[in-house]
Length: 393
Image 1: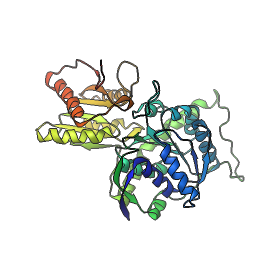
Image 2 (image 1 turned 180 degrees about the vertical axis):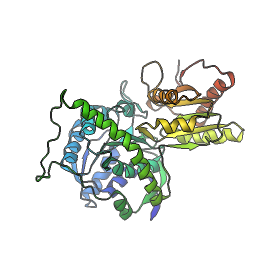
Image 3 (image 1 turned 90 degrees about the vertical axis):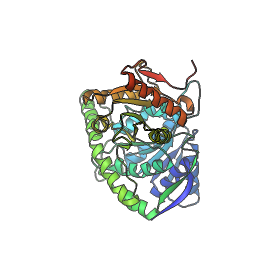
Image 4 (image 1 turned 120 degrees about the horizontal axis):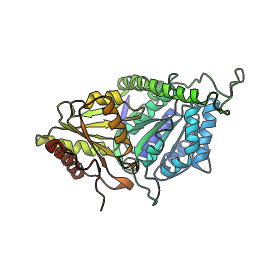
């Protein structure tokens, strides 16, 4: 059973954490994530759930606390943004390498400097090689749904990796939307009880967690993380298939929007995908065959599936809300070009870097971006491989 209520993205995330009722949540505030742990703390204070709520003095300590809790055998969650995630850097890697199924909400925000509290994906891209699974939502509904599925993905025996549930700061975190909430009992049935195979508090089967791991075994452990990430693809799809039975909402690695007969297409993650859909709706009425691939799963990167979905497209515009400073395009563009090259797809591609530091991206902007993709299709020439759209120069 579901009910429809109006919530901000942060309220939705706090609510789903309450419904999951994790054993431990560590909390340190940072804008625009602060509301999540603040609202969740009230649920704990009111006795609505029995989570051990740990207030700490920094984000590094927040991640350290959930690592300790997870290693001890607890279901553990936290939330952060931007510089807070950067302060977790050292231990974010440890969470993944210890194969701890932590779930963390990441409310995407630009990384300094100059200091900026608004949305882009530079924080999420900074952790892209840390070994975390990364899910992106277009709106509050998808952030809520992704968080529910993230628990199952992280704790699956074939995976045992932490999962970051990304949603755009302020655009999703602070905007009110009508979303469908799953009933508490259905949430608990879906996520189930967490029963780790090995954990520190199992005194009958003692283990060591986090020892020195030098030339003798470190390489093998990294290889095992790669295998877990590969297996995660099947698990992500399997759990999404179960989720559709629970809610009627269908998820996969990405969403295809008017791609079947499209000649040109955009690729985007996060809230910009919703704006792109509105622009595409208008252009479709004018007879322009444009489509969208909205990427939901960024890690593991679903390269083979993306190549299949875009193989018939003539020109693709990849939208990055982060810079990589490699002078060859943003981080999503690099992955996309690699995937399409390996897939031997005959597709031209350009990169559009947009919205850094929260700069707005409107339907008109997306239509202008699509025109640039259309120009490449018409002329066959790529004059600018990387376009910084909306910047004053």
